[in-house]
Length: 116
Length: 110
Image 1 (cartoon, rainbow over the protein chains, first blue to last red):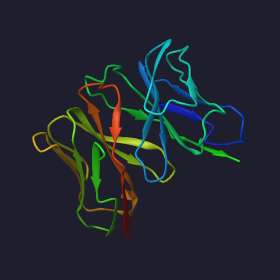
Image 2 (image 1 turned 90 degrees about the horizontal axis):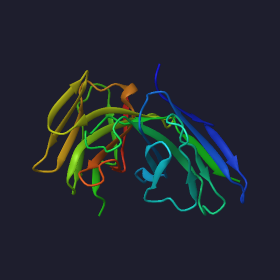
Image 3 (image 1 turned 180 degrees about the vertical axis):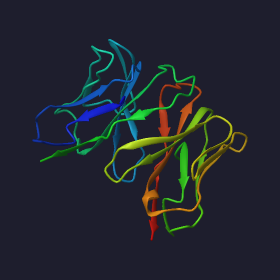
Image 4 (image 1 turned 180 degrees about the horizontal axis):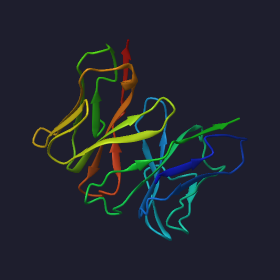
């Protein structure tokens, strides 16, 4: 079945370390997104990509980096520059990169990152 | 003020009750999404609306574009409906990004 796979589900990071969260989709979607969710807050956009080899900063991109070398993969690196990285991270994709068609968005199961 | 506001933030009801969750937005949109977040964190898209009403099983979603308001209804609620329900909008400008409400935590007691 088609879908989005995020890994790992749970990740612990020491302060000063970079960690990379994986996101893979087999839906043949052009657009992919990374969101961060904190308790009591709505999801906030970190980065998005509308096409391979291109990506744009979202609302809270500082301390994060991404790559889009393949259509199906959009990994997120949480760098040591991110001051408060403990959060729940969600990857998503949609078929229409412009969003003008109002396409359904598909989410992964999420990754819990804890800084220890 | 958030661009997308949901109410109530928390809702507890008994099995069988009719449930309504509301979403108001203050920006121009191309579509509105209702999402369900499981206790484990994964999110599923329930509906995408640009006008009118949609129904899927016991779930009904409506939108009033003039009033900038949408509702999600659950008929004959069941404990398995317990989840966080999230409203999100696709903006007319920058439509590739979604703006999310804070979510409504629904608990259905048997």
